[in-house]
Image (cartoon, rainbow, N blue to C red):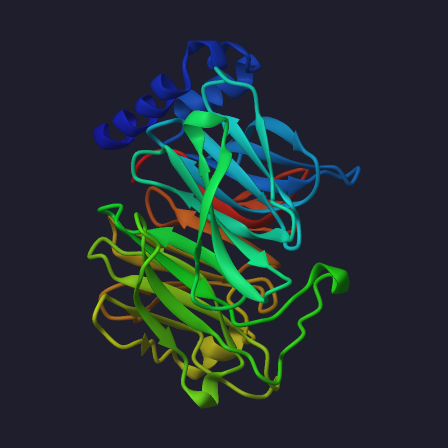
Length: 362
């Protein structure tokens, strides 16, 4: 274990607090002491219940918290030590958990006429929580804004300048929200049915985090209108990486991953044909390891995890992972989970959901 990794692990233990550590079973506390990184992910237990778990880089579960229903994506603020699990679309709850156990969980309920899309992020200071939401009567995407200093009361909203917003992330300086508008119309009366596959409107938008003003918007070209822009992450150089899911014919082979920076046009990565085919027109998650310059992709439909070089886009690693789900920056490389309970090399007694969040700084 390197000195830097030891410092990062210790910073998490210190951040979590002695009171929280004391609640752990001795074996789990020891596992936390030995690990280089700490993660959180939503899961489904064998009895059908849903929750969120804290786990080590080795895949050992440290703690579990029950959730009212299935969750999807996660958000984390190292400054306030809070983790949020967002309900899977078209869910209407988000649960805020305190890493140091100094505060009771807070359940946020979406406003009337709204539902969550499963993703969100904190402001740079950790005070505000931004969530992608659907104003389904008006068929428009919005960003719900919640104040963590007031019990996560809903204090406003911004447009996403598109429909079907899914994932979003915040720039390193805290000024810009990068939003993936998937372009798919949905309505809770129809469950998870996609209502406009013949006239989708996928786009990527940069929005001012303070004012909600549109900085720039990138719509996909006409021949890629069925390429839903779904997940995003940001590299060390501020470049925004995005991953897509294709809603067109199975035999088509559209590009599935790309990147851009403010003021640039979108650039799709020309993956080798065998990699594009392996991803099965569906990238379920994307994550950037900023320290090592790596980009991770997972496809539960293709049963594969792929690692790219962030500078060149070249394929660094291709690994078969049955029902590959989440991906997050690890030490080294990338942590990958699966729907059938795999996290890194360890098989867990729960089914992991589609996303992972790392709880210490990278």
